[in-house]
Amino acid sequence: MSAIDRLAAARAKGRPTGMDYIDNLFEGFMEMHGDRRFGDDPAVVAGIARLEGMPVTVIALEKGHNTKEKVKRNFGSAHPEGYRKALRQMHLAEKFGRPVICFVDTAGAYCGIAAEERGQGEAIAENLMEMMTLRVPVVSIFIGEGGSGGALALAVADEVWMLENAVYSVISPEGCASILWKDPGKVKEAAECLKLTAEDLKTLGVVERVVPEYDGDLQKICGELRADLVETLRKNRRVDPAELAARRYARFRRIGAD
Image 1 (spheres, rainbow, N blue to C red):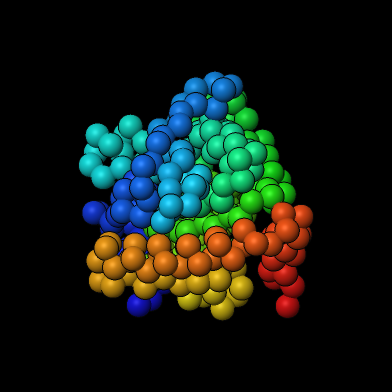
Image 2 (cartoon, rainbow, N blue to C red; image 1 turned 90 degrees about the vertical axis):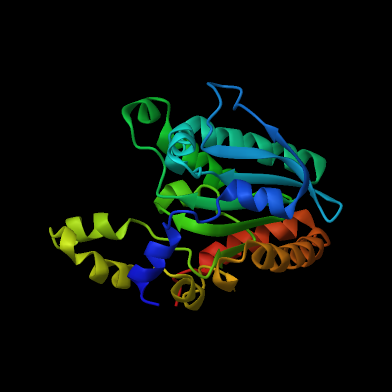
């Protein structure tokens, strides 16, 4: 499939969202609300659960399925309080020794005036800094769109995985075409140039694993994810916390070095 086809698949109506993965992967999920500063952002779902008996913290950018849900979830575009809610749960995970699993699916952080007034850039930057030093295992999985800093704010992880039809880019192809060529019709060319597909990003060393989608069979996808997550998290829990954080830092320093 071409890059533009992968993008269309990532945005396809009916594609499973973060809550679908939470419901099919974990037992006893208990959602936590609020950032203890401003309010609760429905675009970010965060809480605690068990993965094959292992206590974990789960965080997902949630788009919703129908129009009513999408409006409620702000189409998966988080406000600052959403990122701060996520960070609050990460700090609790670190306190209690729980691994963190993030599901990313967003066109980008919300860029409205209110979000800027409440410190959108600062909230994202704080997540990047704090996630780099978390002393518990972190895995981030791209299940749909991964747009710019809004996605990266939940993707500073020991390993980053992508579903085969997910995308991850510094800007949308539409935005790139408008800026570089001043021509929205150049979206296809922009998608190819951005190297936003899972295979491209694995080749570049940005992600560690591409997860097959089995023609959209969520049960098969989750079956593979569950086994891989258990193996990866158990392996990383045996690593000294300081060494784990040092490896995470080194991972990001290697990107783009060649």
